[in-house]
Length: 257
Image (cartoon, rainbow, N blue to C red; front, side, top):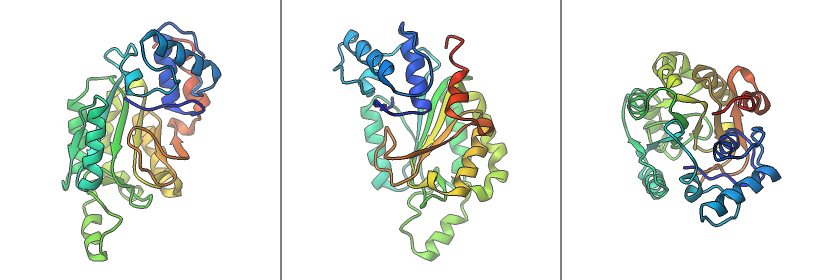
C-alpha cells in the first residue's frame, strides 16, 4: 500500500501504470503521472466504487489486480518509539503487517532474514524501511534515534554498524544484503524514509551501490520526512547501472507484467 498522486514521477508511478494495464488499460509505462495516467486512475476508481480523486491511496491500492508478485514489505525501526509506534499504526491501518526491529546489534542481518522469510522469489514490489536518516548519513534499520543523542551515546550507536547501512561500511555489509536481490519483482524498488538521505553525496553513492546490488531503484527524500506512505518534497532515486527513470521504465513497455 502506497500513496501516489498526480504530477509525481518515479518507480512508484511506473508500478501504478503496470497495475492499471493489468486492469485493462494500455498506458505507456514511463513513470510519469501525467493526464493519461490520471484519467486511467479516475476511471479505475469509479469502476471500483472508490472516490475518484486520482490519488492512489490504500483504498485504491487494494482494488488493483495485485496477484502474488506485487507485495509491499515494510520494516520499521521501532527503537525510537516516537517514530516507530506511529509508523506501525499507520501501516497497519493501511492494511500492512510491518516487520518491527529495534536496538539489535545485528539489525541488518535480522532485517534481511525477516524479509526473505516474508517473501518468495520475485515477489516484492516495494521494500520500505522506516527509520531515522541521521541527518542524511545512515539508513537506520534498528538503531533508533541517532540525531538527538549526546556525543558519548552517539559513539556507542555508531559502533553498532550492523544496525544501519552507510557508505563507510557497505563493503562489509554487501554480502549480508545481497540475498534481497532475489526477492524483488522485475519492477521492484526499495525506499528508506529517513530524513535528508537523498541530499548527501556519500549517501547517494551508497544508494547507487544498493541499486546495483539489488538490481532495483533505491529512493530517499532530500529533506525532512514526516509522512509514512509517501515522501515529503524532493526525492532522489538511484537506478541500477546509473540509469534513469526513462531507461528503467522503458523495459516494461514491450511485455506484460
